[in-house]
Length: 462
Image 1: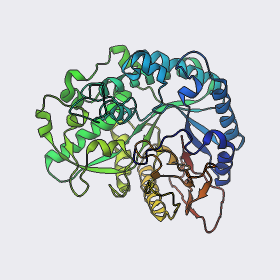
Image 2 (image 1 turned 90 degrees about the vertical axis):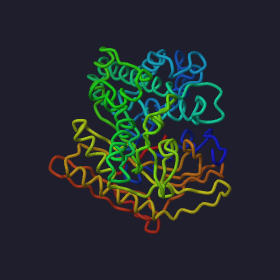
Image 3 (image 1 turned 90 degrees about the horizontal axis):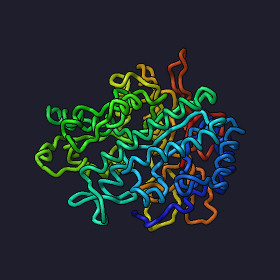
C-alpha cells in the first residue's frame, strides 16, 4: 500500500450517511450503488445477525428512499468474513456457496421489500487474481515464482480458477434463491458486476490480434460465457486444461441465464501484443496462460494493469474502447440489459502530503468523452440502461489507499471529521434513453457557479 493506510474509517459513511444522502439529493441523484458488508451484518459469516449492522443498513436504505433515490445493492465486494476463511479457507471451499446463499437470504428477507436492484458479486474476475495469484489482496495466497514475496501459502497455477468457479456457483445459487423465493413478491432484479477493461491489438500482426481476442475471453468471457452459454470459453479450456474446473450439467443449467442485468466496471483500454512463448512453460499462472504483454510506451506488468484502476498516468483516456466493449457485449452475448456500474478518473496524490488540491478539469474531460461514447453505443443499439460514476466521494481504494481520489466530492482524510470538499466538477447529468429517445444529455456543474439544478446522475460508493 503506497500510503500504508487502512480503511477503518475511510470516508466515515457509517456516521455520515444522512449528510451524504442529503448531498445526493441536492445533486439530483436518482440512484446510489453501495455494498452490504457481510462481516458487519453477520460477523461470523453465519448465524447471529449484528443488530447494529442491520439497523445501519435499514437506516441508509430508508434515508435514500425518503429522497427518492433507489438503492442498488451489492451483496459481496471482497469482504469475506474472517471466520469462514479460518474455518475452511473461504472461497477455496464449496462450503462458501451455502454460507453465501444463507447470508443473501437474510439480505433479501430484511431489505428486499425496499431494494429492487441486487448485485450478487463485484468483480469476481479480479478478486481471485489479486488474492490467489498475485497475493496482494487478502488472504494473500500465491506460489513461487508468481505473485508477492509475502505469500506463505497458496498455488497461483490453480487457485484463481477454483475461486472464480466457486464464486460463479455461489452467484447462481443466490440468483436461484431470489427467483424462487422472493422475486415474484418483491418485484426486484438481480445481476452481477464484472471488471471489463477493453483490449486492443497493438499492431496489425495476426498473432497480436489473436492475443487481444484471447485476453478478452480470459478477462470477460471467463464470467460472461458461463452466464450466457453455460461454460467457460473454448480457448480457456484449451490452454488451462485440467487446472480449469468443470461444470456439471446441473451447474451449467443453473448458471446459464442467471442474471436480469449485467454490470460492467470500465476504466480504460489496454493495448497488448502476443507473448506466446509463455505457453511453452509447464508451470503457468493466469497471467502466463493469457500469453500477452503490454508494449512500450505503456510497458508494465499485466497483473498491475488488471488489479489497479489505471488512469492517464499509465493508460490514456480511450472512450472508443467503451463503445467497442458494449458492441462486443451486444453482438456476442445477445445484448443483455447492461448497466455501467463504475467509470471514473482519479486525482493521483502524493501520499507524503496532505495538501488538498481539486482542480479536476481532467475528470470533466474524461467523463464527457466517455458519456459521448456511451451515447453513440446506445444509438447503435446497445441495451445499456444505467450509468454510475465511481465515485460519489473520495474513499479508500484497494491497492492505492488514499492516493487515488475518484470522488465528485473530495474528502480531507487528514481531518478526523472527514469534511466533504466540493470539486471543480460536481456532477455529470445523464438521462438515459427510453424507446423514443436514444440520446444522452450531460451537464457539467462547476464549483464556481454552485448551480445545483435538478440532475440525474448515478454514483457508486462502498
